[in-house]
Each structure stands twice: as C-alpha cells, then as structure tokens.
Length: 412
Ligand code: SF4
Ligand code: SF4
Picture 1 (cartoon, protein in one colour):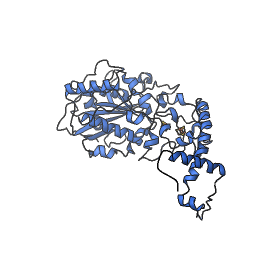
Picture 2 (picture 1 turned 135 degrees about the vertical axis):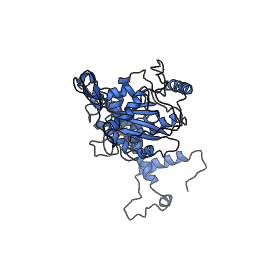
Picture 3 (picture 1 turned 90 degrees about the vertical axis):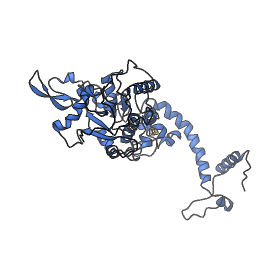
C-alpha cells in the first residue's frame, strides 16, 4: 500500500540521525541507555499516526512473508488498519502484496532513501544478502531499476543496495527469518553467492535512527507471531509508550528466544522418563532420531506455528535447529542423532526407568477413588480391576504415610 499521506506529528527520518558512535559489543542495557539518551536529544519519539514498513527481499523463498501473513497475535491486518491501541497505522511496501508496480511502487522507497519521506519507517529484510560483487553482469536479487549512466541503460537495483541506502535513516532494521538473520540455507557450504545475514552485511557498528542494532527474528520459516509481536513492541517504543524491548546479545527478542525447544516441548516428559521414539510417528521423545531441541533457542513449542497450533514436535518432526546461527551446516546431516545424545539419553534412560516405575504405582492408586478403596472394588463396566500387586500396595502405603507426615490429615 503506497501512500503519500503525511503524519500530523513527526520528524523526517534521516534528520540528525547519524549512527551512534562505536559501541559495538555493548550490552543490551548499554544499548537501551544510549538509545534513550539519543532519543532525548533528537526528540524522535512519537506519537506518530503512520509508520511505513519497507519489506525488502533478498535471497528468499517468500516463506517468511507467508508465515507473517498467518500471524494472529497481533494480526498483520490490525497493524495495517491501525486498530491496535497506541500503535500507528502501518503502511506496508511489499513486492508480493502491493498492487502498485514500477515507479509508483518504488517512489516511497526512493523518498526514504533520500531522507524526504517525512514519516518514520522500518526496514524489514527477508532472505539473505548476496554479495552482489560476485554477480558479474547480472544480480542475485533486486527491486526497481535505475539508469546506469556509464552504460546508458536501466539496470536493476540490488536489494542489498536498497538496504545500505535505507538502513541509516530507518527507525529499526528487522531481519526476518534465518536467511536474513544469520545467512541460512543460501549461505550453506559451497554457496556461490557469498550470502550473509543482514548484520554481517551492515556490520557491528550499525545503529538505526532509534539507536538500535539489527533486530533478528530467526526461523525457517519463523513463527509469524514472533515477528508481529516484535514489530508492535518496537512501534510502542517509537511512540514513546514502551521501553526499549529486551534483546539478547544476538539481537533476538529475549522474551521469545531465551528458552530452548526442549524445555517447553510436549514430549519433554517422555525424555525425563527415559522413553524414546524409534520413528517420527511415535509419541515419545524424538532425540534419538535426530532432535536438537535441548540446545536450540526457539519458542515454537509454546507459541505454536499458527494461531497457537502446530509446531515441529506437535506434528511429529524433530528439531533441526532452523532458528540457530549454525543452521544448516552445523545441524547436518538432519535426522541423525547428535553425538551428545549418547550421554544424555543414557542418563535419562537409567534414572527414568526407576522414576517411571514409581510414578506408575502412584498413578494407579490416584486412579482409585477413596470410596472404591473402602469398598475394595471399582464399579466399572469397562473392566477396571481394583486389585493391585502386593508390592504396589506396600509402596503406596509408605508413600501415603510420607505424604501426610507432619500434617493433621489422616486416612479413614
Ligand atoms: S522431542 Fe526434542 S525437544 Fe522434545 S523432548 Fe525430545 S529432545 Fe526435547
Ligand atoms: S523446533 Fe527446531 S526445527 Fe522447529 S522451528 Fe524451532 S528451531 Fe526450527
């Protein structure tokens, strides 16, 4: 949606917005402090009525766009309509979604690059950034054309060039997906393009007009909600209504990526009890058939893939580490157990076997009502039997004694 609408308040991006000095390697707190100081000086904080988002595509499969269009909390529609309290309306410039083409589509991007847009803007980059110097006479990924005066002909403008032009004046640069964050599949061994992530391309000293280093939302494809929620948090900050969102040392939203897949996996209980799947259709823990969940930062197990539903383990898939900077090379070959599994699953099998057996005893007992205990029968037409083995009864007797020890509770 290209617009020429001007906000009622705001400053032209690019005005007095050079990069913060050399603070490469600063902590998140330090970055937040410098951003606050900087914003205090330059008065960049809103509220704004409109913010433009320029979605640039590098070496991408468009999977990130599809993932984001499926986001539900918040929805892209809500951002575009400006119906979220406190947030400005988002005007999205996306090659696959906008109806404009040619120069009408490119006009706003040119204004942003020249610092004359008159409204704050955010750059979102999907796909890895190719080394266009290796493209010879052609290009790896591009949008729009410009006259090459030396050749006297129009030539495509690489996405990387737009990124370089627009990043300094952007309120934030957000890399979406593992290709844009760390390089991803296009940057795998033997790739001919020199593909890299946005922060590799812009360098460690890059800071946006708001003083933020590159924000990274990894995943192949990423969870759409992770993106829209982060955009909302950054926009709240831009509006002057929220704090600098908390990012980790790699620029990932800390509240989304600090946990491992394994800690929130619906199969973690099987791991703890030492039972493992032999094939993807099994219900147990998948670590012995190639799951890297215990060491991978990703929240799909708690957030789901779309609308809180789905996700790799829910669907029977192992974690191949798609959110990680080491993906894909350091996780290949996929579906082969990681070397560390030999140690961890052996330990969990040993301890888990005992824990599993003891839990089964208690679980059987807790499946009996106290009435059935008194009557020593289960009136079930489904065939449930009351009688327990002597060992179970003894263990349960001792267990119950221990449970009530030191309290007034007494069995009947
Ligand atoms: S399937 Fe993977 S993430 Fe889930 S419990 Fe097993 S190792 Fe952990
Ligand atoms: S669980 Fe693993 S494979 Fe699945 S999305 Fe997360 S990092 Fe990627």
